[in-house]
Image (cartoon, rainbow, N blue to C red; front, side, top):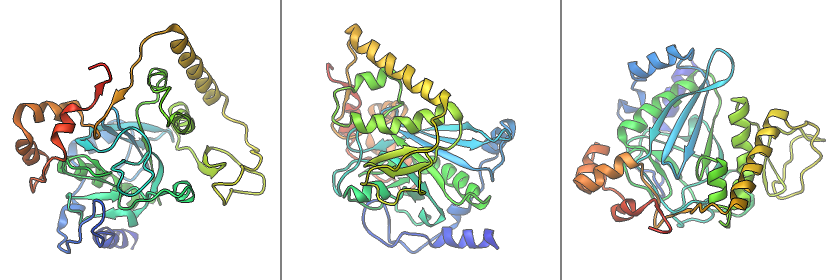
Length: 335
């Protein structure tokens, strides 16, 4: 019964607004029900995973990559596959207002209701922006998606073939009983080098906050519990009096000590950042005119042009968004 309900929800979810990255097209074919490719299923088997086991998705803007992690037989998450991202828009930093072209950064939880088989960009799922914290902070925007093609206005575009595979993996995890899956969206891989490189960015305090969730997952290989209080994310905490209800209010006392291994990792990274900064090593941040594109797609764009890449990344040849900016980004400030 759950399987039938999920299929129906998959075919009917979303798609009724013209905003952002969603289409109002009513024709739904079977693309949303295509199986996970046999090669990827074989990879799951080799890594002691099953198609129905839970997933975590991580997105990295600067690297233009999306990762799917799956829980294996040990109960921990292991990397299943990394997908090159064809296009994202805006700059490094969170989305704060409608129309800013920013792709979201933060922690999101996606349910079957967020799946959209009628996307004008083949298939998609809605990140659920703004989340509870972002809404409390007054951030605005809607229909921020992971979708196909190679066009973005605040979304993450993975090509039609890429999103078809991702969508199938997502669908089977939800069919397997995972109520929601967590999406962790970051500006970059949160290494000491990248943190030092971006030390003067106005978003640095925010990035330091979400790095706590990054470190938790990196060390434990378990999905961090996400809470909202004190105008920020709080990870793997247990609070006196229960879960905070007001993201803007001060956090209640936390009764759960931080995992020593996670604390050690965070402290070591902070020390490494301080050492890099004190050494005088020149670490320049990337500058963006409008988003980025994975190097594999940039090479195709530069060599063959936007029309050729549009045909390669979209079954309906959706145009590449701002191809000139895609070729310019990322570039260091001294280029």
